[in-house]
Length: 306
Image (cartoon, rainbow, N blue to C red; front, side):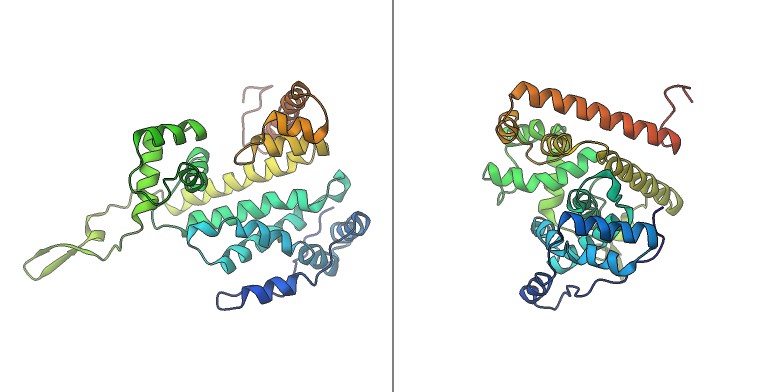
C-alpha cells in the first residue's frame, strides 16, 4: 500500500540569488544508493510511511535532477527554478515508485522530472500558450536544437528548405514550424503597449485582444486528464523488462532517437532483433495503457465499445 505521508521540503534547495556551484557541491554530499539499500528504503516508505527513508531517496537523486535541468537551460528561465521544478517531479516519483517492479528509482524518476520541468517551461516561457498538442510541445522543445544543427539558430525567418527539413524531422506541418519559429524568435509583447490614440484616450494592445481561452473549469479538466495519461505511461513502463524499457526509451522517447545499429551494438544482437523487441515492447506498453485507461474511464473499453 502506497503511503499518503508528505515528503518534507528538500534541503538544500537552489535559490535564484544563490550560488549554483555551492548548491551542486552540497548535493554531491548525498551518497548514491546501492540497489539493496534503495529497495529497503522504498519498502520502508511505501509500507510504513517512513518519511526519513523517502527524504533519503529524494536527496540521493538530486544530482540526477540537476543534470536533467541543465539540458533545458536554452529557454531563458533561471536554472534554479528549473532544478526546483525537477525536484518536485522527483518527489512525485518517490511517492509513486513501486520497488517490487524490479527497476531502479532513477529510471522511473527521470520521467517525472522531465515532465515537471517541461510543464513549468510551457507555463512560464510566454504569455501566449505555446502548445496544446503533443506534436506542438515536441516542436517547441526540439526547434532550437534542430535550428542549431542546420546553422539557423541566429537567423530570423527560416528558409523554405530549412522549414521542410524540420517539419520532416519532427513529423509536423510546415505551417506549425513557421508559426512556432516566429513566436519563439519574436519574444513577448507587453499587453499595455500603446498601439493608437484617440484624442486623449490611449489604446493598448489588451483593448484589442479577445479572451478566447477555455474557462477555468475546462482548463482544469484538460490538465487533470493530461496528468492522468502521463501517469499511465510512466506506470506502464514499469511492466517492461530493463532491455525493453531501454529500447523504448532510446527509440521512442529520446531526441534524436538512437538507431537500430546503435542499440544492436549496445546489446550485441542484430538490428532485426532490436526491431522485434521494440515492436513487442511497444505493443505491451500500449496494451497496458489502454487497459488501465479503460478502468479509469479515460478511453473507451474496446471490449464493450463503451
